Length: 206
Image (cartoon, rainbow, N blue to C red; front, side):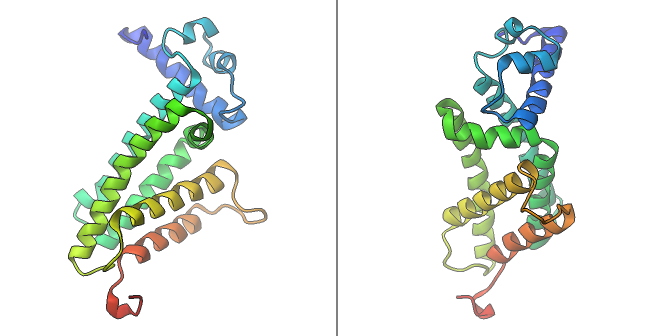
């Protein structure tokens, strides 16, 4: 695919930004390459100079999302915050990334159900996140927290909960009759994460 040079990069970015708009507006399943090209102000034929399919374009967007979410999630740990505070801020970083990248959020959830190539790549990206979260669970266990829990299964469960919570509230508008309040939603999901990891046997939970 042709992406070299300033003009090529600009066109590639135009297709990516257009895809975000179209996926958020129409959903991934209903999005057409012609719609993405029109939103980008480019010809449909030129799309194929950059991507073979809309799934390939979504993979590129998902990789960018993953990179940004990972960077934000790692910041509080690198800043030396205490474990519970760092975990809360990491969850906040993920939420804010999804809020900013609503098109990717919708595309990822829909494509993972029907696009084999995308599904496989998304599981690879998600697997990297699961390993990092499991590592934090193990560190917490080394300090006496959450004894006996399976780090990988816990990481998978927490990640799945966060991803679907973001999809329901940021991708589908939330629960019927309940207004979206960013801080309220973020506090709810972050509190669940913290309490799932930072507890001790003497708390009466073991």
